[in-house]
Image (tube, rainbow, N blue to C red; front, side, top):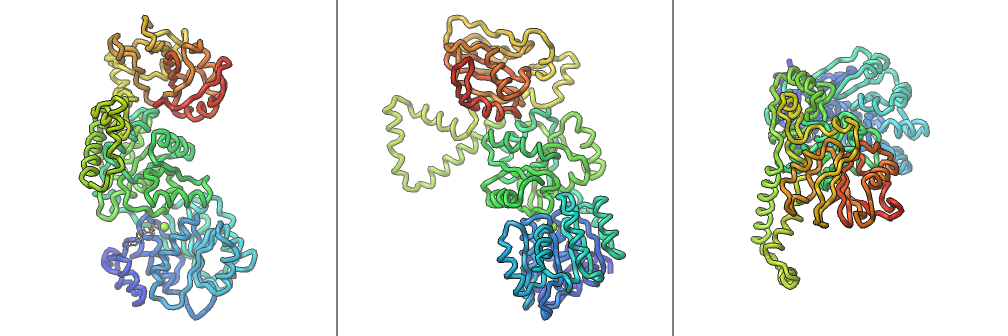
Length: 594
Ligand code: ADP
Ligand code: MG
């Protein structure tokens, strides 16, 4: 019997009661890892199963484990280890559903953070299947509240991640404490060398099942890449989120540090975002996950390993903030969207030095990833307007009892505003975008090619010009008599291009210019009247927040306040260091510029 020919669970020789539960769960057909894994585990062999996340590995071991339990023997017969509390709960729930029609099979989830006394009481009553995290299972083993002498099956789920999280010693002690003739089963999305060494020590003639992904790249996934400067990635990402109205999305990056940075950046921009990576404690992890599942958080930023095994469905899209180092990771990542017949989007943000990795991914997946055009600021405004009009229209149509607010317009009229002014201000507030913070031309890295050809365009790469020595700040714009205007100081070499963005000399041109990609504009409560000079500001910020002075960007000094641009990644540090601090002996309030 080859597994391709297996069309239904009934061909796998399962008991009636399991089949009934499987049908009730809506499973039509065993997935490839199930078609191969279930018979192998049922016949009692040691098994190594590898298949990507979301392919149904839980049922692949859960079904045969249930089939092999003897409910009349009141002892622990199977132990399933999972890397996190969240996964332990997920797995025990899935197995619980599969066991719905089996009489007398008891399953218990055992993990840290839960009351150990309660767990001890449950274990005393008699449990057949323990699903737990290695640390807590060890704990019970040492207290002798969990006995392994009748264990016949041991499953390591997401084995790679467990090793990654440092559970190797615990796993080895647990395995060493079990009867030798037990069956050892190991499932994982990836297989590393340390895993293979565990299998050598603790398994006997294992059957290796590796599901080659022929559904490798799901046809429902729209794969697009964007050429983006590294420092403009968050900006481009938020434009894509706005443009495509992504309400539930996973953002992947390669390092834990990046996860924290991106989350902070997105939060500063008002996006409901949270991160998940290996350093989080289980409690934090499950908080993050439950908020994401409830839709309170719309963007989950994760490393590859941390996202492993998390069962989140209904994603609108996946964004590869960086291009993964391993081609397989790309496949795992984008496989998280476009599930179950829904369409999904997979966007990859490619810096210049990541382009070759994208090429090798295309070679590996044999799918061409289309190059996309970064939405312009106008595009974003356009979609926000359309959505605003739509939401206002539907809210008017609802025509609930709105008497509460009927007099608001009248009150504003009394204060001297026209209806147009009121609506305009509300639209601005609700849509959230008030000015173009980033110049469209400064997001993609192909711009530099234009530079090389002699066709120098607006913007350019400020980080390179900065190091060009000379006097740090040049005075820009002549102040004339207009005291409302700002004195602009831009890093040397920048003042011309800066001013050219503003246009002519009328009052309007004195509005602060666009913030460059990768920079955040801060508002300081001190200005000309406080006799503040650029060097005071640079000195204070650089000294207090401990960032290099040369990374500080344009400074616009007005009468009573000042705008200063700092690198986005330092914005938090600057806020923390400067708030309530003083410049030239004067107390300063500092905030992200609105
Ligand atoms: P993995 O462990 O491989 O990441 P899971 O076991 O968590 O995958 O399964 C992912 C989801 O797919 C779960 O919601 C599960 O109920 C569902 N599922 C599993 N097997 C099938 C199947 N044969 N048909 C449909 N859905 C399935
Ligand atoms: Mg799993």
